[in-house]
Image 1 (cartoon, chains in turn green, brown):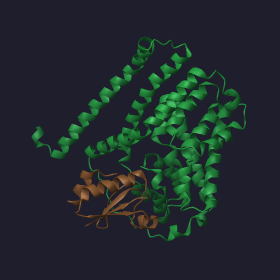
Image 2 (tube, chains in turn brown, blue; image 1 turned 90 degrees about the vertical axis):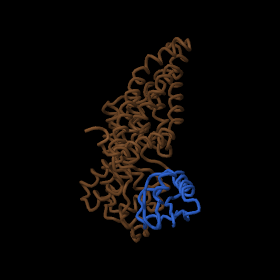
Image 3 (cartoon, chains in turn green, yellow; image 1 turned 180 degrees about the horizontal axis):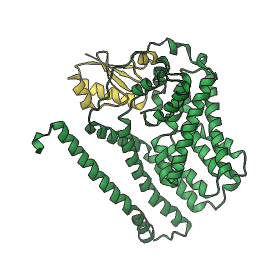
Image 4 (cartoon, helix red, strand yellow; image 1 turned 60 degrees about the horizontal axis):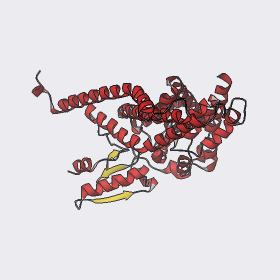
Length: 349
Length: 73
């Protein structure tokens, strides 16, 4: 078969694939050069001694900042393509009418791969509950979708390694499943605002615009532009603060504040974490640096989960559809789940 | 022709509205729908969404001016 036999769609897909493969190759080469380049820059170009405070901070920043941004671009691209296979409409179809036990597990898992933005939490919530998705199952989705997201996982992977990233993902999923199951058990349907159930949500017949790989790759690139374009200042600011901590805060400084023996550090970390949001990308490098200065791992993990998973803006948005009692139950259940994770890891590790 | 933009006022919704206005020119009337009940009744679960003559064409994405032009044509 010669090239002229191929349909135009095929040809553009092939061209796209070739472009992606070469882009990935360039990415790989750049990534491999990163460490020696950063070392050279610190030692030879800036004439800094990595044993000095300023040198340690500079070395950390010069290496970590491009590394994290590159990983972020790669993973966001991959996740963008994976997400093009899922849509909230399909997820709803899968979850509608499911038994609660199986439902919360599937909802938490689908929360990871379904495209979700907290600004559409309300229409999504209504779309779910009015089409027969149980309340608990809906909450399992609403907890897992923001908490186990690609930005958090990339930051954890880049700064802590794959084991911690995986651990975060698994515990995050568990918190989502347990919270959903518990909220389902509490039978809180009557604390959903009355107008929600009377709303006639017609099924939307809209198709996603992607048919072929060409479109999926386009969606991946769009995700990179959108997300990396939005979070890079936070990432850089976070790594800069982290670098400062690396270089200037004395060893074991955090042990007395966030150490294992300080029992109240976990709840305080959760309480501080809840109102903080969108700074997730910036908070993880800071937290990583604190860990090196004697903070306990469980406390740090709980703090990150509270920052990423529970956010004040989302809670305010959800107030439109949930009565205060249900909001309070939601925060308590998820907060307690995170607390449990924090204590568990302080005990185990 | 009537173009409706469904969204609760986030930056993405504003961008889609701007793109739709630019794409439509004087050929269509572009309306912003920000009432939650109306959004949900239309079957929209992810904002921003765009409907042309009452039919939802896309949800959850900011379409470019060109993409909207193709939808109108």
